[in-house]
Image 1 (cartoon, rainbow, N blue to C red):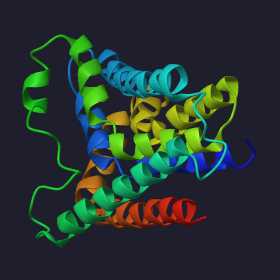
Image 2: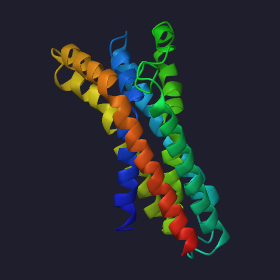
Image 3: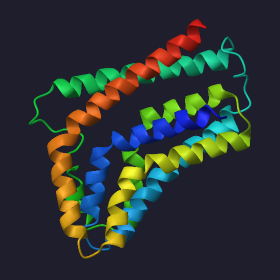
Image 4: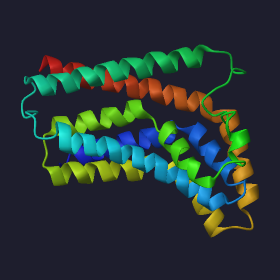
Length: 222
C-alpha cells in the first residue's frame, strides 16, 4: 500500500497534466450562463466515470488471484498495461508529428458552441466522456496487481480521482476565490494552454506510455 499510493497519485497527476483540452473546456463553461453549475457538473461527470471503473474493479475483478506475477489475472493486467502504453505512445507520437496548426488536444471541442443552449446537467456527460480512459485503466491495473484489500483499493481509487481533477478544478477555484479577476486570469490561462500545452501534453503522454510498457513487460518477465 505504501508504494501503491504514490504510483496511483502519479497516474492521477498524469491524467491532470495531459488533459489541457478539459481545462480549456472548463474555462469555456465558466464563461457561459450558470457557469459554476456547468463546471461542477463537468467535474462530477469526470469523477462519476472514475467511480464506475472503481466499482467494476472492486465488485467484479477484485478478489481474483493477483498475488503472484505468474497467475493468469496478474499476467492479463500486465498485458493490458503494455497494450495501453503502446496505444498512448503511438497515438501521442502521431499527434506530435502533425503540423502545429492542426487541431490538438488543447482546442475546445466544437460541441461547446452549442452547450449554452442545453441544460447545465448535460455537462455531466461531457465530463464523463472527456476523462482519459487509457490512463484510468492503467491505474485500475496497478491497483489490481497490488493485490490489496477492498478498503485499500477504494482509497487508491479516491486518491486517483482527487489527483486527476487538479487541473480541471483550478479554474473553479479561481472563480470562487477571486471573482473580480477571474475573467482576466482564465483568459490568460486559456491563451497559454492554446499556445504551449499541446507539445507538453503529448511528450508527457509518450513518456508515460513507455513507462507503462516497461512496467508491464517487467512484470511479465519476472
